[in-house]
Length: 357
Image 1 (tube, helix red, strand yellow):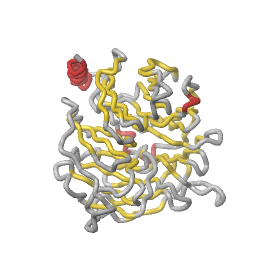
Image 2: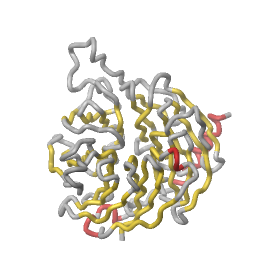
Image 3: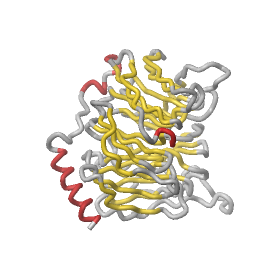
Image 4: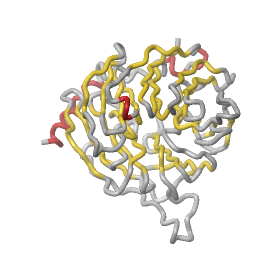
């Protein structure tokens, strides 16, 4: 029955794609020069704030925002009014944090949540039902993303395996097994990660390509059709959260380190393009967890150094706005599909919605 409900939801998503569910990328997202100041529109108090917010995701249309909490709770927020909408799961003391969220890219009615307890939950938003649950036994899932064509979603985390799931059947496909770094002397750069994975991001234009990063100071670029080895690697970024994004042929990474934490890389050559200054005092250090592009020239990043998120024009290094949390680390950031609305939250909750003018 649950699989039938999910199939119905995916069928409805095709209808949404032809009407209000279609994602409007719009010209503004490509025009960094049209971005000026970032203003906090509102702070949204939520009943589960005491458990901390560990993941955020806008729906494809930007009408809804999903927030995942430290006790497994999952809340939908109405972005226009800034008010809580449906509570998909109220949380429980035995559950762990919802560490990653992803809407089906063609629908705002299908949402997948993954947690530190290894549980993947598929929700039908309209009926507010958890239509399917999958458990990755022994794993802590830190990262989750859909391919842009919606055909698959992928997960990664503590066990360093990268799993791909067919989004129609929700069955796991042949996936990448992590190398045994303790017993295998032949671990190459093209092998899987040797330490925990914290970020996974599909390429917005090449549906077969995705990137991963984690504690082993590397970003690996994969083609899901050739999972036996990474196609390319970037060495250096120390990723501890959703600290990877890609726009056109530029990759941005946010590292948990004191200096030069925010960097741009060329997708094709994996060459470092530039360090992007992040405004902190020398005593604080940068220590970034999360980053996303708002346009080709503007990004937003945040972490635990300054307990804030900053929107920065990468061409001019101008700070367009800053969202500060009250002495709590920024753990998660998401940007709406048009690049204009930003959601920021952290360990203490403190969900903020901000908008570029």
